[in-house]
Image (cartoon, rainbow, N blue to C red):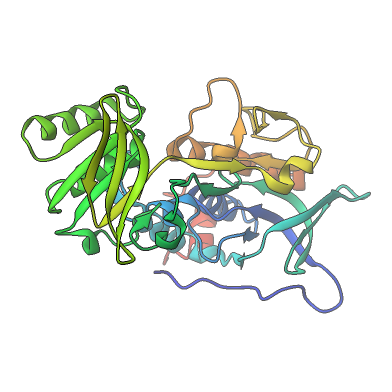
Length: 353
């Protein structure tokens, strides 16, 4: 993993002067560092998690991603590592494990941003790249389940190799559930997928592949709800599911639960920015919110035609960078330079002459 430069906290004598503060160290927040760096603008990055990566590393670090340009397949953690390597020339300062709890516009048009750890910023602009905000997985909710969470009951797969040869039951009907079903089907002793209804929310191609595995006898699929855990001598042995025909017991050493997230904007909801369905409304020219100088990229924003894709967030970050440059330096003439040919870009990127 790429070494990161951590800033311990507030500097003596007052807040940290920052051209830009980026709230969120997921893929879009990290790429925002890159796009700003190309324009000669430095950034501080704040995230409530203790490491960069956002949902990619917190929920599915080993999940393969297939729609990043020029990378036919890329693991979620690999994507973060590549982004961290890409932004090294711009020396961003990271403030991790710190939730932003204070935000206000100053009389001079700049912004005060402060974290629960006491770090304070005097920022020229703010980019909110906080994904869905703070999030927690939706839990299985069965009696006695809390004792097994993080062990026999998992809401994210940290080590797929540790699951090999085991009996696995996966709950859920979205992309994460289907992705891990397809990933693990040939690697485990037995696999059952449980979803509350016959229709799935996952990509049709994934659903089709899953049904092929069921037809081949490689796994089972149940339309059912979780009912109760099977526990013997303090060890999880399986789970009872409630099907239309009644209760059915499934043997399992591991339950993987992908019921989605509880998205919560947290303090961001109190910042006075215009919201629409718990997302920040932005324009599509520079991805600025209702407050000039505050921008939003990635899953946390909304606009007509919005698609919640990492690819879309990268595009948003590129246009936001030019909007931020104009906000910070309205007198400066903007023109597009290409990284292939621009000597200025080469200097900023550290490309040898």
